[in-house]
Image (tube, rainbow, N blue to C red; front, side):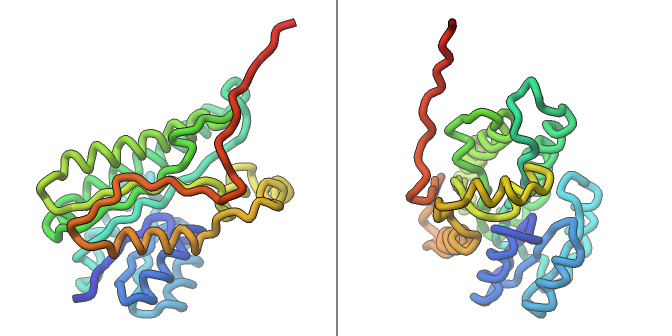
Length: 249
């Protein structure tokens, strides 16, 4: 029986790489995102295995409309990958914009729990799985991480809580927590500063979207009686930040 995965934020990075990998391995893939042209590009590439669902993850009405109008062959969702998310700004808290904080919360937290809640009945019926993309920022704070790190800590804890609540249903829940991975992430965070993005990843040999996609596929295809609760990933050249020390005088 063909399985179906819904991947939020499938227009780039982890989401696009995962859409390709799952489709290439015989899954039906629903890819969501705001950029219709990129989703159409995946449709052109992957054919009938891919269904584009264009909506903003912060718009609940649009989410519901997309779920209600899925083609019959895509309605039986076996796996939800909550990948849509973003970081905005790199400044310490006093220098940030409140609007950016609210956008991160709306996307990384509210949007994620909204689509998860709407899909729980289907996932329970099909004994499916939820994989949430958190971050090492959920565990290790750094200057400028503020609300982004807070949202990812929520995702990690929500994943564990969901796992507890779904005990006995057969539904598996996993929090994937990547470290430095070269995607559009830093371009978005810095408002398109390619120099900053290139400088961050230069010489690091960072993780790639293909690395994360492969990890997601591995988790998704484990035996049904196995659950990976949380999985933290970093490139070898990245390690834990040192403590900050402020010296007076």
